[in-house]
Amino acid sequence: MFTKNDLYEIADSIKPADAKAMNEARKRQDTLAKPPGSLGRLEEMGIRMAGITGKVCNEIKKSCVIIMCSDNGVTEESVASTPQSVTVSQTVNFTRRLTGVGTLAESFGSELLIVDVGVKGDIPDELYDEIPLRDTHKIINRKIRRGTFNLAHEAAMTAGEAVRAMGIGIEMADSAKKNGFDIVGVGEMGIGNTTTSAAVLSSITGMDSSETCGRGSGLNDSSFEIKKRIVDDVSSEYRKLGKGWIYGERKEAREVIIDIVSKVGGFDICAMAGVFVGAAANKMPVVIDGYISIVAALVAYIIEPKSVDYMFASHKSFERGYSHAMNILGVKPFLDLDMRLGEGSGCPIAFEVIRGACDVMNSMATFEEAAINDDYLEEIRKGDYF
Image 1 (cartoon, rainbow, N blue to C red):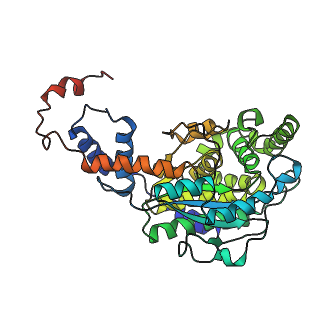
Image 2: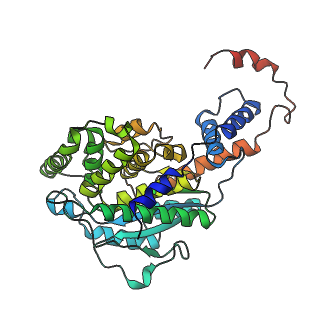
Image 3: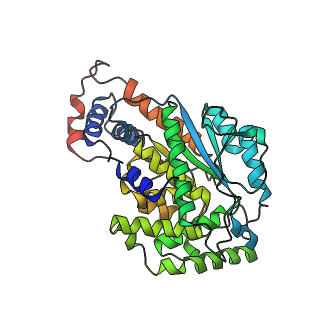
């Protein structure tokens, strides 16, 4: 059984980004045949990839979106406009590549790693597998139980279940690394998980529901008021702490975040946080999708701040709380497509942008190779003309 000590040991093994490799990558960017900084954030991505892998030149050949699927008991409170049955339907549809993320993954040549960590409905036995990535059109069965408890009335799960879910996420990141994937993204499926995400984020930041709650897939006014009331009620104990605790003593912060996610989170959020921790421990770049994904990334960051060195934020989520989590993490999305689907749908697009950034580093000619005298850039390099 995966324990808290196992989680902490893996988190403690995470190394910061390789500063020497990043410096070498920065030097190479300066020699490429272009005005300094003219490829903007593509240059930054290439440099960050060097810090992650320890190599100046990198390739993105195999990419995978890891999708954590689970149900949330809080849907009993009418906080979602979508029926809970959609969780199992879409989990099955991922295997057929009929969903948003499935279609985009097919379009860009990415794989899906679909994991049942707590789907309430029945999934056909023939769609289950136990070994990750043996067949990417199967669902990995790691069901903890059939959904969380209703957090409006009791803790969503035990602390042991929260840690177990994080262990499942780490297992999936390990599997992706062992199977030769160069980059992973983190997505989810679970009706009601904008409520759990808002509750976790309010608990972490001290913000009330007006800052962290959105209407999800489209709530009417009365349901939206119920959602906000629940988020405020269940996060009130932690909101008194403010957000300073997340920068405090590491052991204490870890204990608090596990308490938070066990009481007001979801199996999906915990398992997604585990993927972020596991990717960092494997020195593998990992892409944040939307709101639920960035809240899970924030949970991973609190467990081990160095994990953020391995994260790329794909797209700016439409959800209100996204920007607050983004600001704490210090990450900045590089796509703004008004997306709010979730599922990991931003990840396949982001993989292609990061692949392009790597290809620039690898294949673009230097001034010397292009037979260009770059003396004319000396004044620009010394000054600040951008």
